[in-house]
Image (cartoon, rainbow, N blue to C red; front, side, top):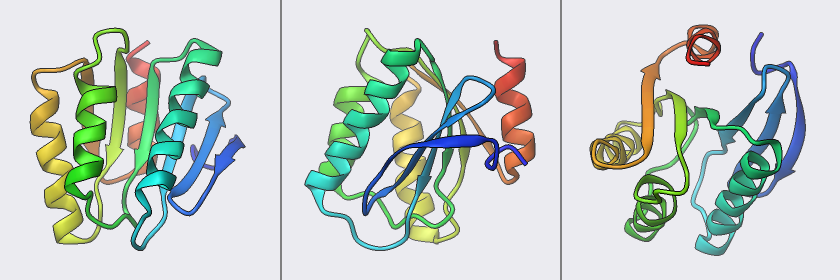
Length: 135
C-alpha cells in the first residue's frame, strides 16, 4: 500500500505529514475544524520537508478533510500556488464531504495559473503510480 510505506515527519491537529519511500511527501488531512495557526504550521512543515529532501511530489489525501476556510485558501494560493520558487506535482485524493470537495475544487481552479501541477484520484494506489510516472 502506498500510504503504508512511509515514515512520520510531522503531525498536528490538521493532519499527518510523512515521507514516502518513493521520494514524495504524503499529506493526510484529519477531519474536523482547524485552527489557522495549526494549518499554517502544517504547511510550513510540508514546505520544509520538500525543501530538505529536494522533492517536488506530494500525495495529498483530503478524503477526511473539512472544507478549507477563506483564510486557508488565501494562504495556499500565496505560499503554494502562486509561489514561483516552488514547483509542486500533486496527486490529490478528493474529500468525501461535498463542501470540502467544493473548496478543494476552487483551489485546483486557482492552480491553473500557478506552479501547482496536479491530478485527481479516487484511489491511492493509482495516485502513487501516477506520481512515480511523473519523474
